[in-house]
Length: 371
Image (tube, rainbow, N blue to C red):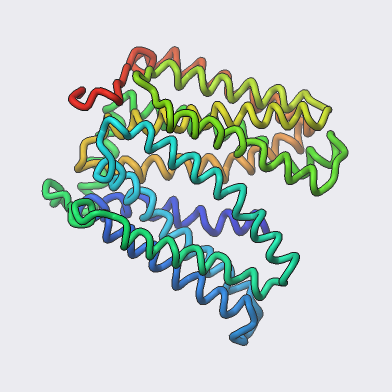
C-alpha cells in the first residue's frame, strides 16, 4: 500500500509535468501557484472531513485517500514550475544562491518536523485531531502567500510565449537537449538519486543490520535532513561567491561516499554519521544545481525547464526506491546499498568525462550584472 501511495502521486506528477510547464510559461506563475495551494486546501479539507469521521462515505477512507493523493500529484506537477519561475521575480539574481539554500533548509526542516508533530498529535489526541494538522498548515500557507508577496511578482506574465502546447513543449525539450550543461545537471541528479536511494531501505536496515527499534529508525530517517538543514543554513548566511560546475560533481562524490560508508557500517551512531554526511552533500548539490539552472534558463523557458527537471526528480525518487528494493532482493541488503553508492560515484565520473562544459562552468551569483 505504501508503494502504491508513492506511485499514485508520481504518475500524474510525471504525466502532466510537460503540459504544466507550458501553462506556467503562457500565464501568470503566481496565479498558477495560488490555484495549486487552493486546491491543496480543498483537498486536505475533504480528507479531514472523511478521515476525521465527520462525513460517512461508502467504502471507508481508503479510496478517497488515493483520490486525494492523485489530486496532490496533479497540483505538484504545476506548483514546482510555478515556484521555480517565481523565485527570480521575488529575490535579486545576486541572492538566488542564498534563497535556494533557505528553500532547501525549509523543506528539510518541514520533512523532519511534519511527521514528528503529526506523530505526537496522533499519539496524544487521536486520528480525528491529527487530520486537522495538514489542513490548518496549508491554509496558513495560502494566507501568507497572498498577504506577504509584493504586487510585482503577482502581476508578472511572460509576454514572449504564445506557441501552441505541442510546439511549446517541443521547444522546451530542444532547449534542454541543446544546452549540455543543463542536461548534464539534470541527468547527474537523476542517476545519483536513482542509485543512492538507501533511505528506502532504512526500515529493513535498522532491523536486519543494525538490530535497532522504531525510535532508532526515526533517528536514522531524520539524520540526512539534519545534515541538509545545517549545511543549508550555512549556505544561506555565507553564500557562494562563485559556483563552479566541478563542485557539483564533488558534492555527488561526497554523497556517494556517505552512502558507501552507511552501507558498510554495522554500528548505529556511525550509520547516523554517514547519513548526516549524505544530507550535507545533498544540500550542497541542491543549492549549486538550482543556482546553475536559474542562471542558465531564460525567463520565458523557466516553467518548461523546471517541469522537465521535476520529471527527472520524481522519476528518480520513485524508481530509485524500487531499484533499491530489487537490488536488496538480488544482492542482499548491505551489498545493495554499497553497490548503489559505487554506482553514484560512477555516475559522477561519467558525467565529468562526458560533460567538460559542466566541469569548466563558473557562475558568480554575487555579481548582479554577470551573464
